[in-house]
Image 1: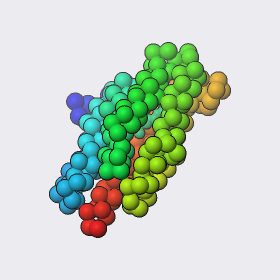
Image 2: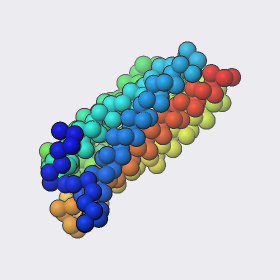
Image 3: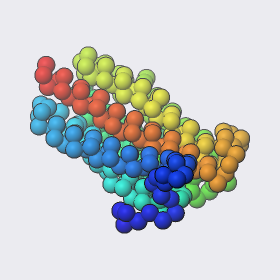
Image 4: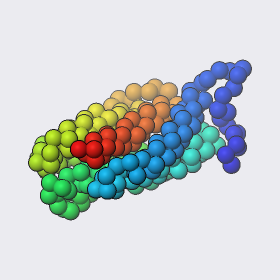
Length: 251
Ligand SMILES: *C/C=C(C)/C=C/C=C(C)/C=C/C1=C(C)CCCC1(C)C
């Protein structure tokens, strides 16, 4: 299965790299990057203090789950030339709630309650399930689903920037406050990459205006954007947690 390349060859020396090859390549690089990051996080668990091990473990689980999904997504894309929407959303439904767990774990010391964790998880599930409807089952209404999904996204950003996560992080010590601010930037800027991909790949485009005229290829642009977003947000986010764990363990 790993080598079965039918519709899309990864690289054809006579044709150079077309859009399909470039898209397949980002799936391939994504797989490797997620695998490498997982090995790194798992091995580094023993180099942080006991209180921080769970956080680094969760960073590794996020990239590991993504690595497995990327392995399948790469294959699916190469076999069919279409977007692996189902694997993509299953991956997100597992990994985004784990990112919410990261926020909970780092603010727990300052008294975060489980209700905060559930609020974050609930909002992320709403954000992703409505996104799936707009992308897969009800594409005709992609603008409507995108707006609902966006509202849930802004609620998460609100909690992290101004709500409970932000205020708790202030009382958890300067490094936690600083790291939470960096993670808040990931949510505001890094996560904003995803609605951009969605606008490229769905017929609704940017509030009814398709961004990519070439509709046969629209989802390829979308996948490239999603793959870049995942690399930044899963590996980068994990590294912020890791360096917080490291500096707190040394202190
Ligand atoms: C590792 C995966 C991550 C961090 C995925 C995050 C996904 C999003 C923030 C998706 C957001 C969306 C919108 C805000 C509107 C359009 C639909 C989505 C699902 C692409």
